[in-house]
Length: 215
Image 1 (spheres, rainbow, N blue to C red):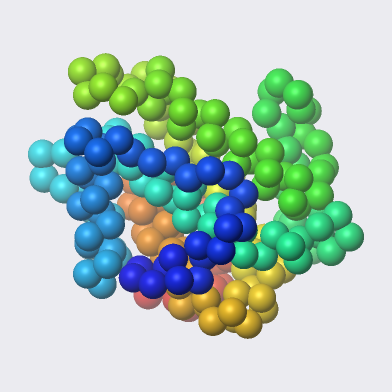
Image 2: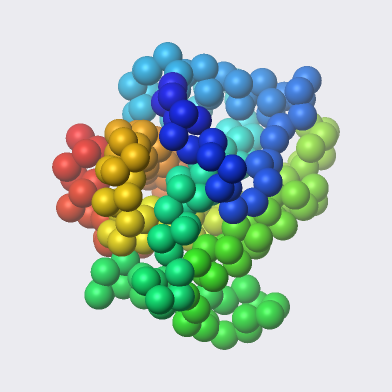
């Protein structure tokens, strides 16, 4: 994953980056995960839970990391993704995603892709900044709904991959970022499938590509 920032730190991120506080246990886990990535180790191996670590902590670290990385990836193509080019949040003609947050959008509502992704990043940010859901102090237990919420976050983040791969991948190829996006996708795919965090039906839109690159 080394060089990821070379392509994606272009002041085009959708939202400010979420960081872990240095000195915290989760920060150490985050650094451990980053070091494994940069060392070019087997992606299937590095998603495995380190010995004596808590699964919830491991999931929390990865949810935040994937939020940041996917945010950066979409940021590079967002100027090509507007109401005209992408009037719906779709992944080709067979898949369309509607937005529902139970607050402002009480029913599934069709919105343009850029609006969907903006609402999604805002919604995720609210969740990961909620200390009752993502506790900062190691003495504070994770709530019972932590994994179900993370499943929803990761399922919706997967949809950003679907949209970018199907509608904007040519732009990624143009800037020479194809390998980096593929690596990020593989890391995401191995993680969510290892811990059954995204339903197989949700993974269908990218099934053929996944079979090709995630061997």
